[in-house]
Image (tube, rainbow, N blue to C red):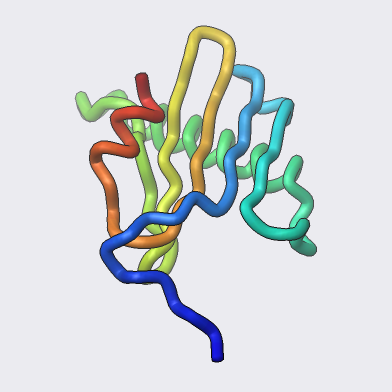
Length: 103
């Protein structure tokens, strides 16, 4: 029997770190490597973040901080001076986690 996580808990599945241009630097995973290329995934998150930031800045909306994937998966985006940081987690949305990633 597979034990499902409690719906109110959050579980970090993946952490990606890239340079400001989107070149992957580090990938950490809670599980064994998947069939998805982590460099490609990190680059995809960078492209999504850049596209959303460019698209919505003209409307006076700030930077993208997170996106939701499916029912319970989320990606929190963080941006430093020279680095981009992505945390993929499962469970309920967490403003606290997203604030920690951003700062």
